[in-house]
Length: 70
Image (cartoon, rainbow, N blue to C red; front, side):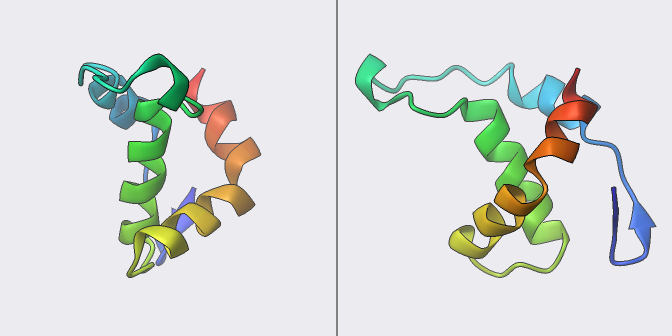
């Protein structure tokens, strides 16, 4: 993905975020924790200044992101 004129890779990033234990209750696990952390992190790297804007950015690029995670 090219953002702010720099290319970065998300596969290694999600690998490290998957190492973080998810302590949420079962009913609160609607979304994968590692994917959410990657989305927020990349959103901030792309200049989004809030979590909501970061997640909106992610929602617009989710197909590309998931294709790089495999």
